[in-house]
Image (cartoon, rainbow, N blue to C red; front, side, top):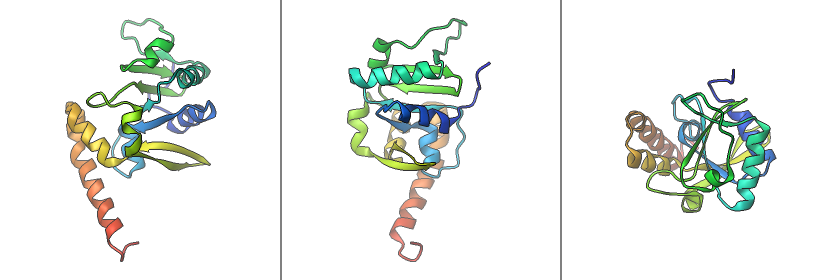
Length: 171
């Protein structure tokens, strides 16, 4: 049985080893920014060119990814789905992975690139991560109950980060 909680480091490493161009969004993004939240999966927004989707597909196959199917079926990753704007929810041998074509009000990788930056997440691994203020905007746009519940935590984390950055005494 596949794990129900993502091995985030393992998933990020597989994506990096396959040269997938992507950014981290969602709960793991919040954690990287220092927000005290819980998450069970890794959410990414990839660049959706044909070449990058081919790399994503190879990465997914290497971790035995299958679409999460509530009916119990086994649906393999499909390049046409990965090139689309929808959400691809996978279960892998390294836990849940969500490959999102767009987030919020239809924002894709290109639309979000200027609102993200590379972050060293340890063990020599650097990944592109959505900025915390952009994550807050997207959570507000989506407006799901779980997103609204984490908003105060994200807003507080952003305020604390800004305070630390602007206070020369704490630098």
